Amino acid sequence: GGQFTPELVVNLHWNWVVNLTGFSTSQKEKKCVRYLANEMSKAERSVFEIELSLDHDLLANFENFKSIWISYPNSDFSKATNSFGQIIKKYNKPEKEKSVKGSFNYKVLLSTSLLFVFCTIFYFVAIPNSEYTNHKIASKGERLTFTLPDSSTVILNSGSEVKYSSDFGKQRNIWLKGEAFFKVTKNINSPFNVHTTDFDVKVLGTEFNVNSSVLNQTISLVKGKVNVLLKESKDEINLMPNEELVWNAKKKCVIKRNFDVNKILAWKDNILLLDDVKIEDALAKINQFYGVNFVIKDAVIANRHIKGAFKNQSIDEFITSLEFILDVSITKTSQNNFEIAKYHEN
Image 1 (tube, one colour):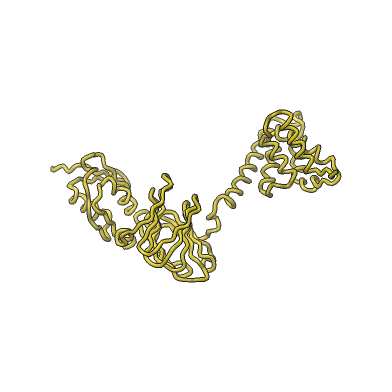
Image 2 (cartoon, one colour; image 1 turned 30 degrees about the vertical axis):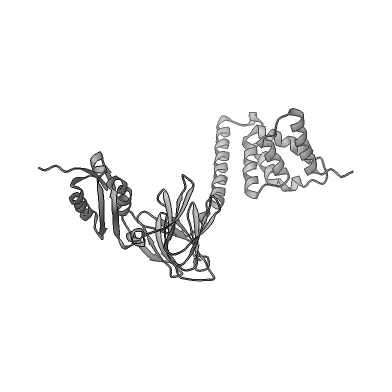
């Protein structure tokens, strides 16, 4: 006894196709119904309208659904699809009217338009850090210290970067790639948030280190209290002073443990700390610290252990120390590239 509406008719037609053929509806048919029912966002509608001009099968499906829709006087379809009508009128011409060159230019134009729409959507929707207007980068081999607008201090490790908005004093959000130490000015009315690809760190006033540049990513708390949100699992974990969270994105494993503050934060004081590790395991840390690339081609040398704290040493001074400690010869093979080999007396 109910009245048929365009939305109901389209859905009945959709279900009738499924029951009659035994096949599930295609993505193309779903797109047509979503478009007619105004279930698409403005960006999705724009993409769909361009797809209609490129895909003849999609256009045929759409025309079938459209013919049912507009047969009913209550339909608002014509009001909602002026842009589609203009596109079809402009581009859906008989083939005989199109030259080969014109057809090629037309396809290029539409492909470019489609790419532009997707890039726009990706920039404003898929990239969460597009709101960040200020950008700080620590060059290779550099430790960069700077002050944020709220008087908080940041120390960036070599090759790391942060981004933050121009109104940082009101919304204290900062995006990090790499490793950084934060000394946060307390403001109970404005939490300080550090965002990385895998987790968010929320604090009020504290000192902590975040390293997202290695496989085992860490948040190490020195003072205060922080809350860590793991984006994938949505788990929230609180840290107290001298506690750190270790997240392995590959293994989906999280560990909470105590840590040695002096070892974790040595880098911010321009100290390269190597704590009795095999030289091959220390290369990643050495390479990041100095912004260079050391390689070892001898298995015996690779397994030698090294222990020491190298403070304020230039790359040349460090090489001299390394040659003495390991009894090796280090040769510069190209710009910022060095090879560690056995020592040979002349």
